[in-house]
Picture (cartoon, rainbow, N blue to C red):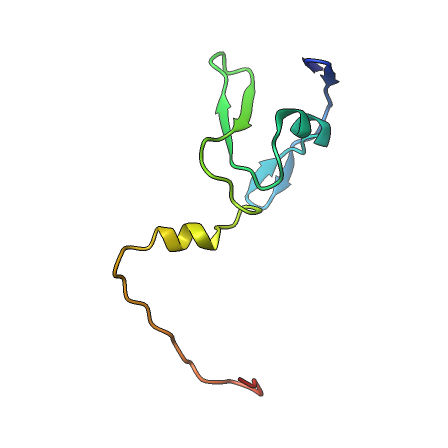
Length: 96
């Protein structure tokens, strides 16, 4: 259990496999109290005593559900870069 101002938030959870990683679910009330929303960038660090994991909002801009935002990708393109379209033709009954 832990306390966050007027909130007394705590839970016991299970570390579960998630693809090639492991993960835990965080209660919505805790995330709301911290101002963290789905898709936010988080910083995850080990405490100095190596007895706790610290999760807090990161300084980096948020991504939308873990995916890159098109605005960020376009802004990162080098100035004057050339782009091209590819046409591989059709392989079935596609209509363009």
